[in-house]
Length: 281
Ligand SMILES: NC(=O)c1ccc[n+]([C@@H]2O[C@H](COP(=O)([O-])OP(=O)(O)OC[C@H]3O[C@@H](n4cnc5c(N)ncnc54)[C@H](OP(=O)(O)O)[C@@H]3O)[C@@H](O)[C@H]2O)c1
Image 1 (cartoon, rainbow, N blue to C red):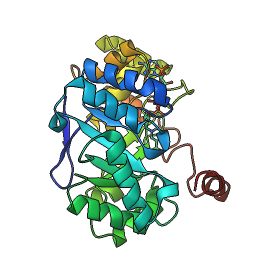
Image 2: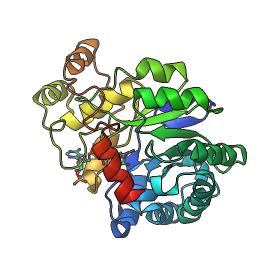
Image 3: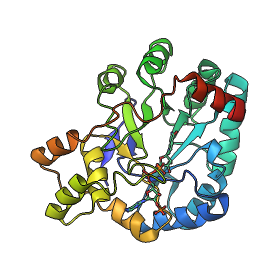
Image 4: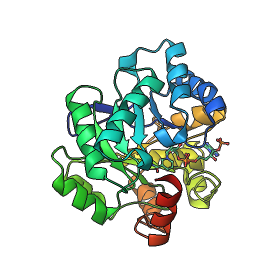
């Protein structure tokens, strides 16, 4: 497994396993499978209601804590210094660990500066090894990163071969922030990446699937990918992307697939913001 070095020196695996929409009941089985096929980064969130399943699977795996990289996220309902601090302790309890490797603010709403102060404190106290944000699109990201003391080490964004997030790269670089891709295979219920003829054709030259090309393309750009699958054979397939290198020509062909650079969700759309806050805040 290749690693990525964060701005504070922490090493993070370039490929991990995500558990969005994996039910609490199924999560332990899925994460056990993922760990047994070789994943060492697990991406969960308070809002996924499955942190306990992740913790149970790790506890039973026998894998040393220092060999695992756990990512979780503070949900909107827990925004603000006091509530975020409590929620971090709750996540630690559910994950059954003394520290979280990477803690993110899940969405850019509510008292995110208060949440960040709690996260900075958790970072200083050793409860968290790295802190970052998620779904902070360019303008929001700049405003936030400019004013906080500890700069976000990661911004987790919707990113894949059709949503390339090229525009935000210089801003992330300005603050030493690394990108992590959610929906690296197009997201759940969307098959346009996996079924892409271009990716399929490129893959056939390397004996790889379109999904593997999509993941290799991200990791070759230095972006952490966290594909989700409940199927063990797909977990294996998705992890098996470090034994080939896409040529410059193939990287250029994939660059041409960019359709929605900033993502398919406008996080500044008042209707979307209203919906999230009214239903989940
Ligand atoms: N920060 C955020 O707001 C945010 C938002 C969304 C997701 N995330 C994180 O990012 C992770 C990944 O994103 P995602 O779950 O939305 O989508 P994704 O990983 O891009 O795609 C998952 C979908 O692809 C299918 N799949 C997986 N591997 C495949 C393969 N090799 N061939 C064909 N189909 C395959 C899965 O089906 P099966 O399960 O049936 O195999 C599932 O339907 C999440 O689990 C979560 O950890 C974060």
